[in-house]
Image (tube, one colour):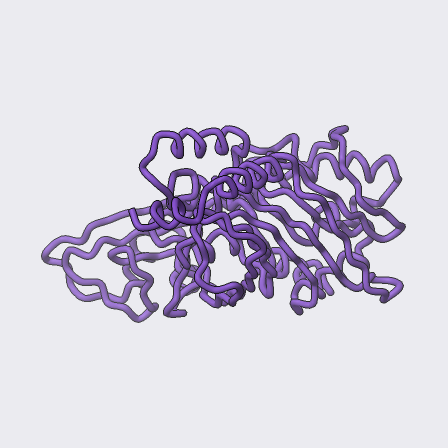
Length: 365
């Protein structure tokens, strides 16, 4: 697998990555509202005439990628502009610096051999340097660690990273220590043969004990730094998440989630789409009371939980794959972090102390 192919895997197989971590941040380059006298003109030609140095091929590619919106909607390249249309053009800017600074950052290494590393990432650690996060990332720490082991970093793209989990998601990440290992691991992600099991606490009481969410995911059409679900399949990339209920706490539910694909923010977007955002997820509506009562004691209980778990309740618990050299199946497991365990135990105590009659009464309020 070539470096270019690894780049493709990185873009497509990207479970729960903060958009800004990659360093590719969509920003608004042009916004214009057409006058009442605007004559019909193909959108690609119109934009090309307005943007200095833009070629028609580049404009057409941007339109196909959803980076040109007309009235907050994606259009085709043959769309003809009309009076009063509002046209917005986005561009993706790279971070100011691509240099990775090695830093002596403690790494929680679960497993290591000559070909790969398994790291249990803590909450709050960005995986890859990007806009506003050039130091203190997992890659900075990896760069230092691998240098001490005399790994040839100049010939190891992305410092061995094959996939990412986002800043406030905890759990397992695999890193290739050699280009061959990285390529073979990337191929497994691309073919969806990697086992990934997450544990999450979500709002609400799921109707079914298990199920599958299959809805396209792409950038939100107005707020380009977050993702959105597109059930009509007319935008974004296909995304499949399998879920299973582990424990019910009436107002929240503990679930396991298995990724068949790995789109950016996939679990967070899919759970929001079905009405069960992750507990504490400020980006997708989980940092407020979504399900519950109007009692002040309940509100205080939720505030206490949010003070303990200051992020989305999501942990990458299991990771399994075929070893790139031995061809043996390897599977790793990690404990839930303390903040999630404490909040789950609080919910267990809170709802376990209620009588069935009281729970039914509260449900009907």
